[in-house]
Length: 633
Image (cartoon, rainbow, N blue to C red; front, top):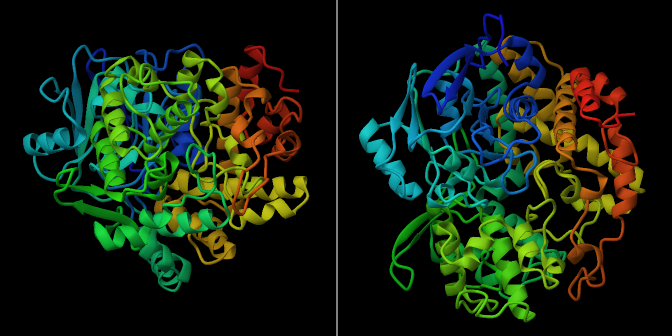
């Protein structure tokens, strides 16, 4: 991570912050040039450092775990949609590689303050928050902030530290070590997945506040400006981007997933929701939406922002909901009350929790209640019937505080809850490696949603994707797997660069436009920002390097090919009705063999081979895996 290099300049801002909470010591180091050029930034930094800094036997909630925060190589620059950063550490939810990606303004501010990397170790003897004010960095007492929700602590820090601070904070869920807890940025953007809010809570780190007056230095500002102008012109003429700007994920995804019969309904029992038109983008626009917003340097502004005034939920404003949250608190629970969904979104943000996993564990509970496996005696008096939004909201609150035996159990996630409840409940737990999948049912689009089985964080929809992915089902499996693997590399580029997947890959008019932005323009932006030459081919190689580091990390932690699986809901239950009626996920094993083969991994074990690791410059990882007794032939 650092060494004798004088440190990189341009784009990266050149400094890594090392924070030891146990000793209360903060150190600044130059960012090593070789490390930066090899792993690019963002997810590249966090994934390699998880391998290097987190022992395989570490307790995710122990002081030996680390919190790694890394903006991307282009975060904070004038590049379009350059807001993204990652929070990472071993996941307390899944026990494996953990990270979460967020936008807002925090990541850009961190980069503009001069920091391309932040590594936090140890455990503070009392609650603290980290204040970064340009060159001045200090740990400040947060005992008076402990117990406050995200909105309260953000407001308090901005009052006491001064104007201009951007805050990444945990709520009560993180303090209470809820394994669904995330880190909430700017009050309503979430680095939510894999439970990293609980890791911050275990370290008694309440928040990180950052302010900057400077800008990210650019090696060739004129070239950078010219490239940005070209991207903006393409963006202005992109019809799909314009539609996304107007409708957001709630409109574009809910309509399509429902049309193909793959929209999570009642814990994935069905693929269409009869109350869809009460919770979609049109319903939101006609009721509570007051504006749309965007992150740093975002021209699309696809985020919904809503206000609820009076009624049974009182008055509040909330950023959202995105499609995943509308399903998690809506169709996934049989709820068609849009105000209740907004309230659930608001509570999750304030308490600091991931809405996808939170909705997943509540949906699991409701199905067990439906089937008689759970009764009111088990649920601490809650009637967990489908559509009962009052019970949903109460359970969100109880989980955040671990209030009552039932909520305390659910706070550890659906996998642990199913193991503890027993009585056949595991059959209805929809997760992979402990993580709830996104709203699209794997039975509706099989090859594309194989991504849930092999995502390095669990049932992931953001690591592997593909424009036109729904058509992959029509191709021979090895050809489909090869295409999916190629796009896996493309989709990783925004994670390394700190730009938004929506603007560069997902919501572009054609796949050719996505490729132009990612493997043609982005390398030029990188060179103009840093002065380091980078071709599109080299960038895709860096993506593959990161993918293989992540796979190796999980293999070292004990994961095997048997863990690359899908829940019985997808593999054993045919879709009962709708456009996907009769479909069941029946290609898991042949897809695994095809996937491992196109990755250059052992086709039986799924472990990266020494040849593949050395090809990517990862011979040191190959040696380490062998020292750990892992067969990499």
